Amino acid sequence: MDAIARDIAACTACGLHKGRVRVVPGSGNPTTGLVLVGEAPGEQEDCQGLPFVGPSGRLLRRLLRLAGVSDDSYYIVNVLKCRPPGNRDPLSEEVDACAPFFHRQLAALAPRLIICLGRFAGRQVLANEDVSIRAMRGNVHQRGGARVILTYHPSALLHRVEFRADAWRDIKRVRRLMTELGLPREAVSR
Ligand code: SF4
Image 1 (cartoon, rainbow, N blue to C red):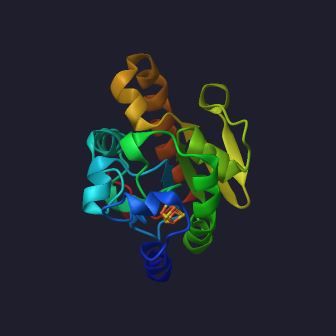
Image 2 (image 1 turned 90 degrees about the vertical axis):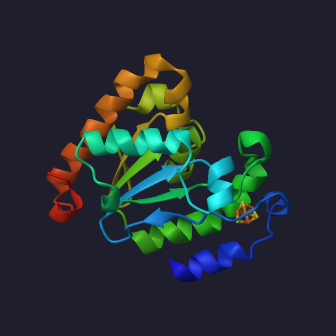
């Protein structure tokens, strides 16, 4: 993961490198088999070089803790490693340019369970441009040897209260799947 992060730090493959303060390669525990996938860094992530440290990230981590999923029990990456201006949606050419880093990371992490936060994550993980979170959440999907859950991006939960009950069900399913898959017990808060 360190070698990939060094390559990301030197990357100028798409226009986003021009506006970034820092690259955001990912963070967390890379050994547990649980990987969370987000979309792209926001303002605070860009400043700190860490994923999910802004308001939506804090909400996500709080929900995970409430469900018994501790901070050290997962690794978290974004599809894009540099911040889109104004937090706009990623462009397809940016996603394509960054995809080799993302897929190298997933290969190195060898997850057994992947949580996709939002449609851009779901598209990349499942290699399906037609991913719809509303239509596909609630089921367990498969990518190679990993099970995959789709849920709303936490930034949507900040603004759309109607999504929160479903998101909470999805997060509780994560905990159940961790137990079912035998992911490291020390990675699960009791
Ligand atoms: S977003 Fe990805 S492809 Fe674009 S400059 Fe950053 S690291 Fe490179």
